[in-house]
Image (cartoon, rainbow, N blue to C red; front, side, top):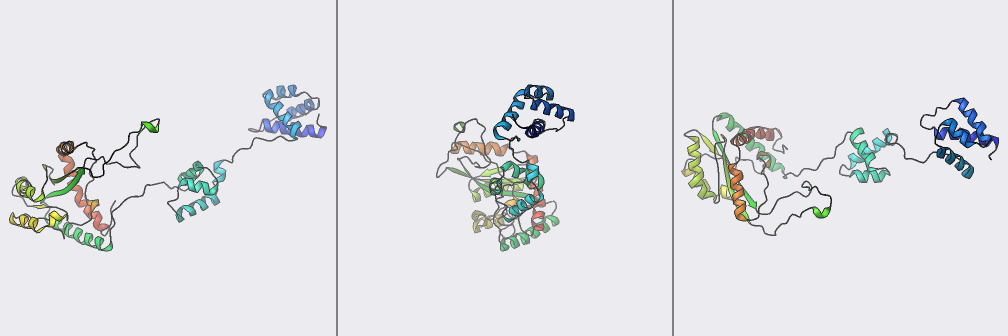
Amino acid sequence: MPTANASDLIVQEVVDVIDFKNSKVLMTQRDSTRGRWKEGKPAAIYKLLNYPKTTVYRVFNAWEAEGKVCCKAHNMRSDKIRTPRFLAGLEKSIKASPGTSLSRLAKNRGVSKQLVSKAVNEDLGYRSYRMAKQHILTATMKATSLTNGKRLLNGLKSHGGRIIFFSDEKNWTVDRSYNVQNDRWLAKEREEVPAVFTTKFPASVMTLGVICSTGEERVNAERYCKVMEEVVIPWMKDKAAGREFIFQQDSAPAHIALRTTNLFNSHGITFWDRNTWPSNSPDLNPEVCKVSHNSIEALKSSITREWNAVDPAEVIRACKSFRGRMEKMVAAEGGHIE
């Protein structure tokens, strides 16, 4: 049995350890506990304190074996670690290298990733974003885009009722287009996830699409000049019905060839030439969707089906957004707008 002084100490620690959550035990209970400890009656102690018998014996046995009683070691609460000093150092590291992962930030500080995530999101107000992929624009490109953009806007203002026919080419391949980061597959095992197969030189189909700013019709064909003369030019004149219109095309080699220019001039077609339409301007074009195909015929069938399924109202909205996007590009002085 421990000495009287030791018994007083252990009884005090027993009460503190067992009732560490609220630390409220009446003094009469403490006095009574001391008496029962001196008499070697632990059973009377746990009955008096109304605590589990195993807990009381465990504390007493630990005292007799090691001479001490303490709570089980536990990690410090995250809000105690996320001090102003800790957050200041964390923010300094983020500003010095914003691309550092949360795992690396946590490892460098010897804390959990969850703690760093809370500190970054809740305390510092940062969010993790994917880096955007954009077409590089040199100072010359920006200056050219700005000049051409202003010229186009002036033309739109002075010819408010003019119809615009937009055109573009697209090379479709039979291989499926996918994004390694974003395309996911829900499964319980990795083996259940199907692979995406690709070929080294996939078969492809080149298409030409032309839409009217009024959203009335769509057309696509294979050879640019032949289609322009046999299909597109007659179609544009028919849809314009005598009204003034202009044809938009980018700076692809087939578009700026002398043969193409002569064709437009011979038919009296007004068009935006290579010096008018801003080059390298993907921000001014709507985003194309991706489709997977198993053969050339399936690819052609899918292109035709999806093209014919486009809602004319959607075409009108896309065409109407052109002017607003052009104004944003000019405001950005020829730079990126998204």
